[in-house]
Amino acid sequence: MPAWLRGRVGRPESYCHRIMIDAVLHLVNNGIKWTQMPVDVAPWKAVYRFFRHWQQCGFLDTLHDALRELARKAAGKSLSPTAAIVDSQSVKASWHVAAETHGFDGGKKVTGRKRHLLVGTLGLLQVVTVNTASLQDWDVAVPLLERLRRGFATVKKVWADGGYTGSLVD
Image 1: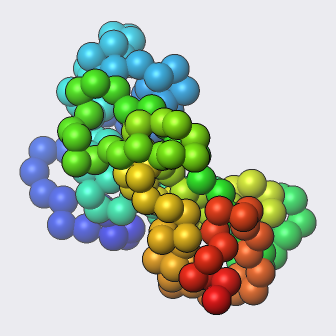
Image 2: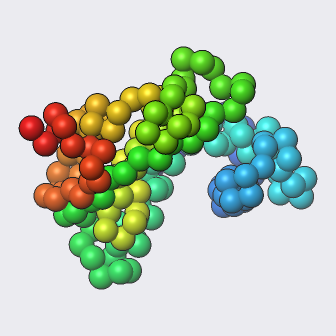
């Protein structure tokens, strides 16, 4: 039995898990709010409840990892990557985002957040972190690479742009 199902007691679920996954994918693909879910799928509160449970128990991470392995296998690659690419992107923060969670990126002239992505050579996500935009790439690089090492010990080479130089290269 999968770990995310252990310890479940009570009344049997009244919704199919496939329908709930499709509903979450619909939400993500269309960029809609929870309350704008189509009524013919399932009530938005039920979909949200499933999503939160799956998020808290690690099911979504497990699902993502399994899909990444299937995509690598279909592309004729080994299941574990040996190379990665890291880059960052600064994104403007909305007015209602808490002030302590965003900063100013002087290089890109953006006030908001910065996401750092580590992807494999196929472009499949391996590690992601989101910080204030005021943090420099080289400050985030070491913790990001430590997370990569814990999850993907087989990675031997990482390509990065000039923003990750400095103490990382030293």
